[in-house]
Image 1: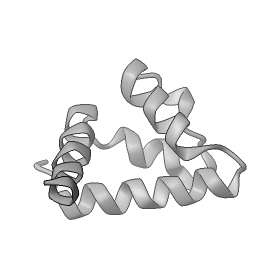
Image 2: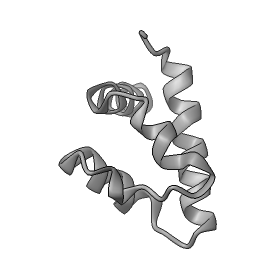
Image 3: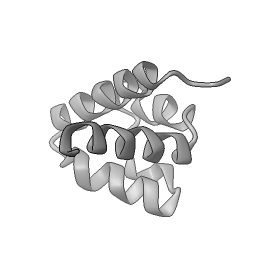
Image 4: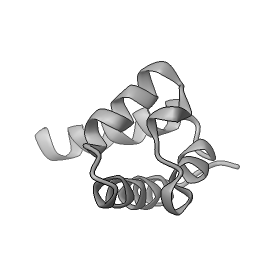
Length: 73
């Protein structure tokens, strides 16, 4: 499946909200996951781990970098 940028953003926003609800720092958790590939960084609360695991880590990084440059160039 070729994920659309909007889909990736929506998934990440949902995962971030769920991590916050559980008391985690979503940035630290997502960065840990992206660097290590260990899904244990992402809580299974509200299917967050399953949701983020559906996305390729390289696609997540691509979308994050693309959006960074949209705002800073």
